[in-house]
Image (cartoon, rainbow, N blue to C red; front, side, top):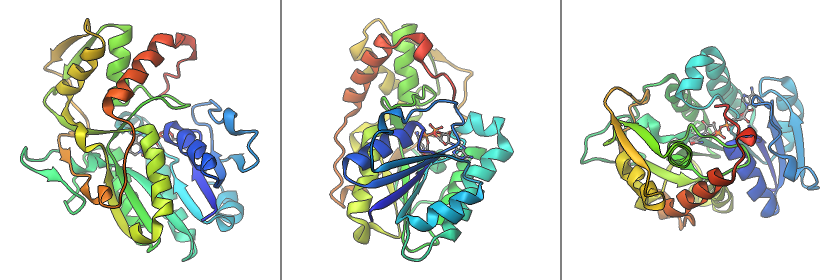
Amino acid sequence: MEKILVTGAAGYLGSTICTQLLQRGYKVTGVDNLFFKKDTLFHLKENKNFEFFNLDVRENQLYKDLIPKTDVVIPLAGIVGAPLCEKYYDLAYEINEKSVEKITKSLSKHQIIILPTTNSGYGTTDKNIICDETMDLNPISHYGKTKVNAEKYVMENENAISLRLATVFGVSYRNRIDLLVNFFVYNAVKFKKIKLFEPHFRRNYIHVKDVAYTFVHCLTNFDKMKSNIYNVGLSEANLTKLQLCESIKNFLPDFEIQIDKEGKDPDKRDYFVSNEKLEKTEWKPKYSLKVGISELVSFYKNLDEKDFDKNY
Ligand SMILES: NC(=O)c1ccc[n+]([C@@H]2O[C@H](COP(=O)([O-])OP(=O)(O)OC[C@H]3O[C@@H](n4cnc5c(N)ncnc54)[C@H](O)[C@@H]3O)[C@@H](O)[C@H]2O)c1
């Protein structure tokens, strides 16, 4: 398990995951078509264990030259989030679902695949239910459906793990403000207010660096963990959106929370999640929600608007 191929390497998760994999001594091949026109992997270019291909995951070179030379594939390339998937509807299907199917089918039985997917597939659940990995999925948005289908293809392989990620937060090399925590903190810093819809909808959260650590954890414990699906989130951070805003207000007391009765989440995400299955593998996240909020407050205070990537 030396050589890791990461597609979507220049993205929010990819740029942090590639960085951590290299720090742990893996050889990393990054593939990305730079959909957002930004090279967020500049800091890795001098690393002799890193190579980068500006390549679309639909191109043959991936299947002919790169996949056969790797031990592990982490397919992150995608059109990410419900709004973007509505905007690029067909492309989302091709990249999020069909290309993951094609990658999975091209693997030999010795190669490994670890897929990140979203826990938004749990949809809206009863208040007394804590979602674990055995529950039926009910994705609502096109994004959610493409991810759930991709997971089905991947899990047909024995050497596979699927990670159902909670809402990711924190600073990465490509920054996304469409993610709930990042978006709320950005609004708290820049505008000192937020219009909050569905304030009692419940969500679970995880720091981007802990997501990267989770991939390393899967690689180092692969034999024990393979052929399984895991929720990935902070058990201490099963919070409603209103509770999340109140946590941010602890850092920024003049943050005004206005309730908006009109807005709706296209994924209807309202659930608490159990991360017990992953915790039983001795997985220990390092970054609390408080630490992430504190980092984001500093980041948005210090960030020059012109350097801010608003593409999402
Ligand atoms: N960030 C989250 O909260 C979250 C949660 C659950 C799952 N995920 C999954 O993790 C993966 C990465 O998400 P992210 O947050 O880093 O998103 P992102 O938009 O930052 O990264 C996606 C990357 O894929 C690249 N890409 C898009 N189309 C491509 C193509 N045809 N060929 C090659 N590269 C292409 C983009 O240039 C971009 O760098 C996605 O599969 C997403 O569904 C993310």
